[in-house]
Length: 193
Image (cartoon, rainbow, N blue to C red; front, side, top):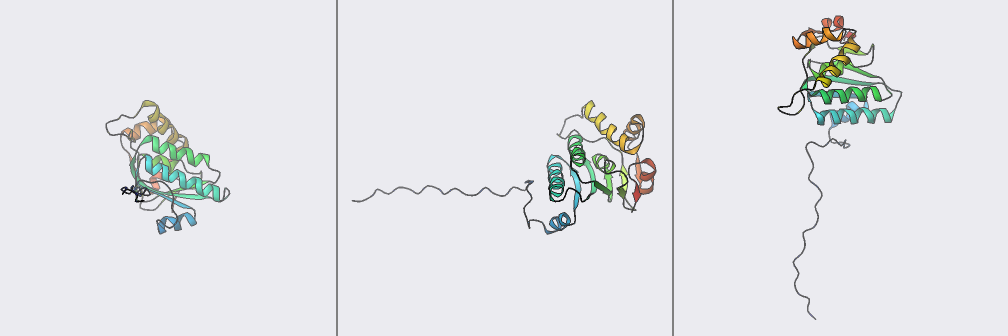
């Protein structure tokens, strides 16, 4: 008996790799892998939802590996959304290890929020770092930052810098910039080094 010819069905293919994936794949980035091995997480560029997801995942991963060993978060971020910055700050507060922060290069807006929220006495700026108080974005193009988000950002910076919320608000509205030593005097960081 002869079977009729049936066209073959396409075989399922694995999904194409995503460029925005936040999954940590061993060996995917040797520099990032080495930094994780020495308990350093780097935040550079724009702090959007994807970047916040990656940073938060790495902080939680390192906390799970050793909840007693500190983590260093280096920040070289000049823009970002308030929601993303607050998510990183909340995760820094959530994990058991202290999270030291270090401002490297130019850090502004949401980046300053993250640097200022580091563990007390463990926030630093490199000697040539520049930190700028600037209102973070709302995240979506054309969206406006809610009053509540703006107040949350200002309150976090004020609490960690020892400044009054009104003073931080005025300096943010004026887009005030600081060298590393000035950032220490303002209370955004604890040391230059």
